[in-house]
Length: 418
View 1 (cartoon, rainbow, N blue to C red):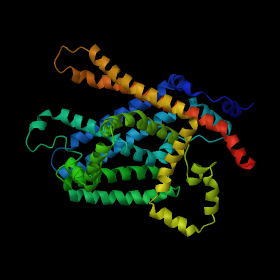
View 2 (view 1 turned 90 degrees about the vertical axis):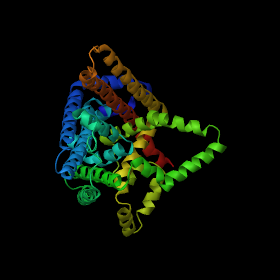
View 3 (view 1 turned 60 degrees about the vertical axis):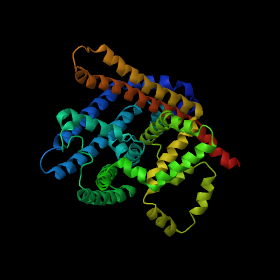
View 4 (view 1 turned 30 degrees about the horizontal axis):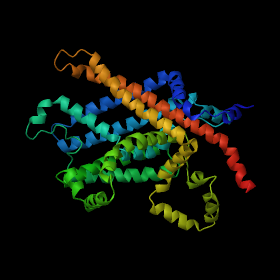
């Protein structure tokens, strides 16, 4: 029996996810820690450099460089995540099955170029970028604590102080770069087209946010004054009068996001990196009734499909991979995802207790000694939690992928029998 057949015949059970994650972490501890350490050092150096140049003469020119460096910080975070997930590919049963089928391995750079656009969308949509913003502001504040109480100080303003005209000009440049390399990436050309497009799109967002800040006195006032937000608040109040417990549901919503949506988001990132990627809608709907409909649509005019692709602005090529990833997650079964979400939340809670224990064990008799111990304690905590979390992502993907591989022959036979 071939290795592929053995893997397909004995997929791991859903409750094996935490133990499989520990095996992956033990087998790949060295490359994982190297990726994490180098990524954090580069990220910290870029944040320190951005905070350093955010003050002085030629202020607006400096802020252009600050946002450029901050965009690099986000790209480093994306690259570190992809690198760590790529480092454990060899420990996955699904990878061994692909190699037995003579499937070529892709490099970490290729995986990043392929998935950078989708990862950037997830990174911004789910607010992961707020950690980068918070770290920048902390570093800037620690550089010049007196600036926080000085009138006219530019402390902690490096990410939002760009003039509106400068913001619009840099947005235009970023948009042109994004459009050019985005078309190359969609056409499959350019080794770094995906990475360049992602960088330009992130820059476009960050410079655009500065334009928003420059046009309004405060972001919260601007958001609160929008008719859609105000209308939703009114509707929510009316629903609360009719539906019992509606207000409590709002209190529970953050826990739903942290306990279900965020774990699913990280699992989607892992699935994208490991190559469960749909180049078009056909991959996503394969094996379903929609595939028959797609066969009929293939006979339609190509001009209609081309026009639709232009009007959607590349939506299909960017977000269909996420739908395919979610479909693979569903194939793994609800118990598998439940176990993954439980272990993921447990790691976050355990990391908080680990960090607290580190501060308790560190000497604290001297005043402000926490400023010395804070960085190493947080680094150790983040290294452990991030490494185990990504290994858990890899293990969950591996179980879902091997289960889907085992069920694939049955799915291929069922349409013929029908």
